[in-house]
Image 1 (tube, rainbow, N blue to C red):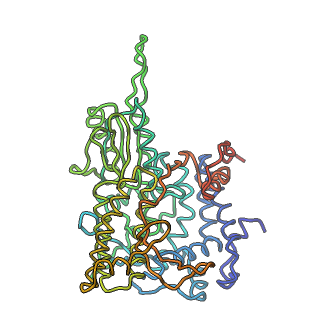
Image 2: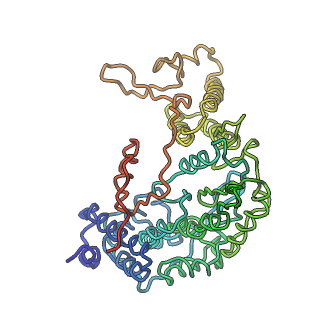
Image 3: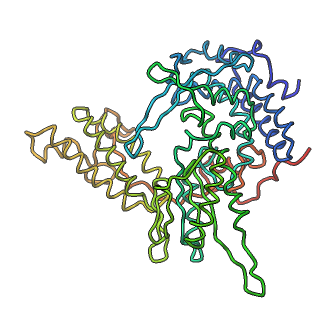
Length: 504
């Protein structure tokens, strides 16, 4: 039995959950994904479809799909049926239940989460079974999506992050000869308005399965509502569908705005049109405001209209680099010819509001509990901004936090002196005279107190992010060494990767 046949072992031969060889499963799936990439690059769509069928019907693929939805942060979140898969026996049975024959997706459970602008974002929560089916078909679709994706698209893609998008924007705008005009694009309700007809015509996956997910509808307050457009936020496969909808815009811009030879020794005209996208947020640079407003923007609007989407007239604007613009929570602006990327005012304000809310909610809590709650938020925020010019902002945040915590401590002990309160909650730790820290009973090998300390934002080292190569492909074995270098937190190898998958 060859590797492909082994990967497609019937569900009746499935071992118990704890007996599954996950390395073997991952290896089988990676092998099939690499073959899908190769077939896609060669233009052999029929071959790619056959390999997708093999993967979605394989034991390894189904097992990994169940593992994904039962190991992630939403594993305890149920759909309309209220079911969650907790026990090993339930998970093992779920592997055998992932079958195409007779499959009908159930409606989504509609919930709302707050947005930064104080509005509410609708989410559609599928059932565990539907989530696992989406995760299974995503294993077969994502290699194609990565092969056809825009080079400078960074959202919801393996091994890519917001830091890569920001670094690419820095590279485009930091040089003296760089473009000085930027179009900030904002798509109106991107996930909610994508055309179903376009997805069914252009996404290379099982059409019957995809149609079932798109038309499943949602349940809100006991009523079932139909869905005629959009892909629900909350679905496992939705981010990839949204990415595939927007892919091709960068290539369309490159075709429409090439460098032109003016002839007669007059040199070349460079429109300086460059593109960076993270999910549905994107920027486009240009040589002039007129190019962006009268040529680039109409092209983008036509591209989106075919897919059922449109730009927001209020939020889409053209900005000069000396004025600056906000992208992914960070402000990009040139000061006297030098480009600086800093945390945006809106992002800092939202972070401080969140911190203040945590402190207010823990007015009577133990100091250790407050530190745990704050550290989760502070650490996530500083790690997000640690690649940019954020030292001054980090100092400001630490200053605001100190005052808020001082008010928190004084309010708890109104009859005590300020000196008593200071010594109760602040201690000399790590060379600092006073650090908000709690003694939770831990001791070092030398017998000293191992303090539970509040994260100090200003102590976070600022390190320039090394951007991922635009052509790097996570499903191409030729790039495996490159990604291993990145995962090991070392500088990626400067050697050229192995050539991409060659024709057989």
